[in-house]
Length: 239
Image 1: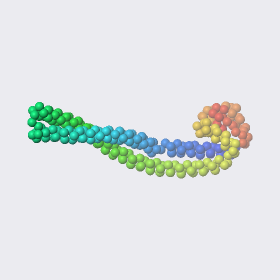
Image 2 (image 1 turned 180 degrees about the vertical axis):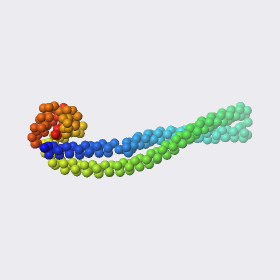
Image 3 (image 1 turned 90 degrees about the horizontal axis):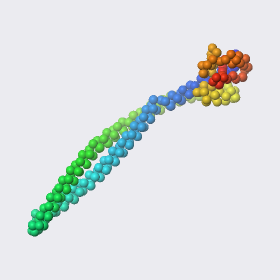
Image 4 (image 1 turned 60 degrees about the vertical axis):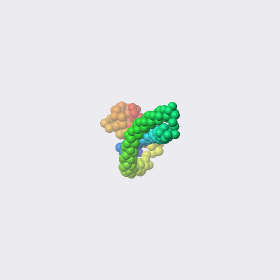
């Protein structure tokens, strides 16, 4: 007859494996993975928005400077034309100088206006891109909110199952002697979560290796409370 404490240990092992699986499932929920991807995407959009907004800001500063230059040149050109055609100046040499100055100012103004147009044309696609990023960001934020809600629901369901398993485990653990329980838990930490295994057809179901004749004999002769470990994997063996 198998030692009841060893049978309880096998039952405990089943609960522990279920707890491990539930915790892994909780951590690997698709919604959690999707939320991590959403966070990366939102971060990327945020960087793009910041970069685009900075470019627009710089171009708008250049636009304002060019507009001020155009206004200043126009004012100066009007003043020079007023002197040129107002009759206040009669000397030919001075009139020629004024005419040259007006022409130069008009040429400068056209150049500044051309540059201003280029800047304004550069702002347009950036503004459209910023708008597109805003829309994309809002859509991602909504999807993130939906995923967070779905994740919370999944976690709640799994947490309920976990609570049940942990409570059941505690009941079973109370039937296992403290020394045996500590030995099992130490083995479990180093053996992929499996510290005890049933022997089936002469094989350890933990590592699936056959037991030697000496081990099988020792297992058959073991007294109640005596623990036999598999020489190959180290797990506690249960007949």
